Length: 401
Image (cartoon, rainbow, N blue to C red; front, side, top):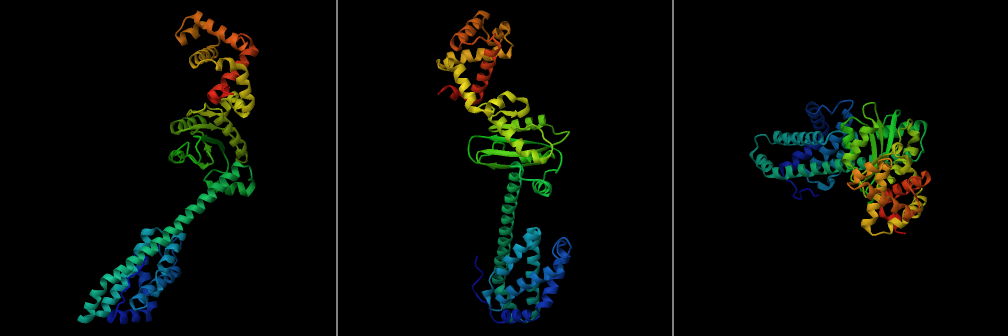
């Protein structure tokens, strides 16, 4: 950004030089008008009077120096003002209004000094566009400084947020550090919590887009971040916002698979919650948008926790079935799933599959022949159930080896 290169001459130069010589008086007038127009200035929670006068002096000196023929001051002063006001949280519109008030006072002083002198009046009129272009450039510099600081604050806050969440999820907190992390994340320091782990299988992709905003609208405290290929969060439960309500909300928003830990008390247990949530997520069906709670699906979680053993079991039990053509394979697997769903009652299985009872018996006999396991035998039924669950979780890949 550049300021106007044309230098004012004659009356404007002399008048601006004169205003520089009584700068304290101009600064006081500007400060009084700003404090009257903008309540945030001069208040104990906003910009204190001494700070307002200090920045007024720097900005007015920059403008008047330029108008008196010394433009080398540049835009450092307004940019610095933008930085300082952003740091103290003064809204940008209020900062810009204050800057316009100061510029207006300078213009009014120049008009008053021109008086009825027609030559001074014409010169002032001719230079007006330069003056307001200068004000626009300085205002832009102020805005740039303000936005730079806000951007850095956002980055700093994001880093602090992620560091606090990582500290909780890694179990590296206790005592005062625990309270500090909870405060940074906006979580209650005491209560009941769950950890959520979700994934789409794609790096740095939100599996639960907008979940933090949705929870915030409901008055539910939570903290989230996307890391590697997972979307991780801690959610504070309440008597009204239970695990069941959370599961329903997650199911509405999930674009991938999600797992929810068992509820835990102190935040120091978040590291265990993360492990449970990740296992529950891994226990969901591959390629699905399922949301699974750890304490409601312990068998799938157990299998997900030992994927190599589970895969070996699936191959050993289901290998001959998985080697069949796709149609035959799915017919037999669906029949076995339905057998478990209806507690082995052949009539109920036949009704569910829209086939004759003899067809069900034929299929079950074929399963027994292929696998060497009859579902009426407890051990064989247990192995078959675990193998089916592994196949559901891992998909067809469990039988491709």
